[in-house]
Length: 447
Image (cartoon, rainbow, N blue to C red; front, side, top):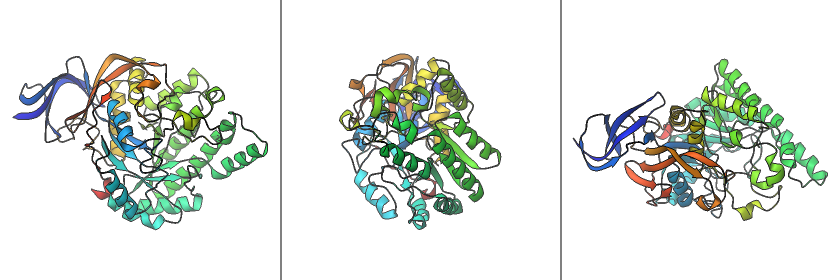
């Protein structure tokens, strides 16, 4: 056998273990993994490096088409490639996909704009629930649901949420639910504005843990009753995870999504950092012990997978005050390095990283076995990692249009050496190669 590409001598890592092996690639797919030394047109020496499947980030906002001064597909996917993320699932709130026509238009627009493979999510509008089945068949990866009006997207009350979940359950669709109770957040906002409050402390009084817990409790009950497959987005606290765990124990098909900000950023940081810590739900951790509880939930699988919720804004955009600045943080540049550093710190293993940031999200959203592992037949999405390499995060090195990071100044141990998409080099030593070769990967309903 003469393959097009061979990655030789590296330590191949799966969610179940690791072993020294060579990986052979032809036509963009893995054709052999083993210790046989065979010929290839191109040979890469991976001695001393760990070889992981490309990361699969299933919660990304690239604002494209839309507010591309905040982020676009070429730039955001370059940041992804540099950080070892080879597949994303994207949805932008400014131009939401609500119909098959919207999806077709977006796919046409994105032709030749992505450096990594991508899926697209659709938004669930309360008066367009009848469109969900056709969208699923057209290949959307999942349906995004808000329970509170955010980013201009209307929240679904309990009645509309139950209706949407029942429809999704009828055809086996999956959804991602942003859970904050509309009545609690709206009432808090009204009172804070009436008081004339403009200080940074309003965020934690406006988007409270109570609002998240109440919305999650309603969502999991309705998911359980309808039989829908639901993911609870950006779980911020162990108390929220407990609600999900209880419903799982009763048989509900629920997944809990984790994001780095709930492991690394503290509740009180907003008081000094202001809009640069404005995201929702906001940070809940107050101590090392709080963060360690979250790590334990991730290690043990209570939190199923990691996503960035990459929703960048530039420094200038974030300087509009706590009420007016956009929600969200940049995350694609830093999430994989953050997880590799957690391995160095002894909080995770590399096998855990593969599980939570590649295999588990790929399986949940119908992208596996094409994505999420390094078995024969899978796309040759490969990330070579130097476990001892380091990177001190700086704004200068952020590829995202945001141009800043909440982790600036932190030194992260574990560095992406090279990234390959379907056997083609797309980044080397954190330098993306802008080839725009990413393809749309239909979700389970469109396969």
